[in-house]
Length: 87
Image (cartoon, rainbow, N blue to C red; front, top):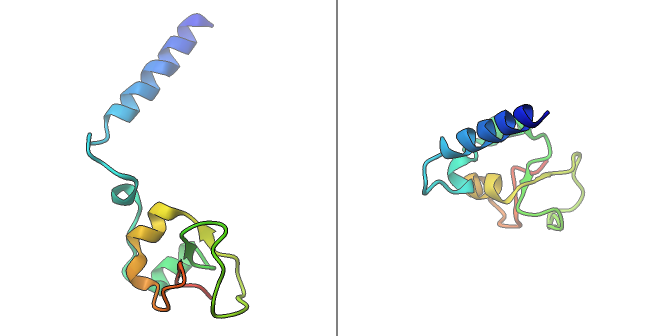
């Protein structure tokens, strides 16, 4: 049991050290070419936080909340309401 815990801890430390020292969450988040590509993975778009309200009214799908993913795709938030590519 102790050996398994040590091996698991070593694997976690090894995986964490594989990232560059200056990597931020925005650098790890995927940037999509356009809203069509983003909506394939996130049908409701991507919100900066779960408490962000859509200024455009009702939507068909609830947006996925992720600050890092939103920051990586901020260019797709045309109405600047904190939700990129909302439907």
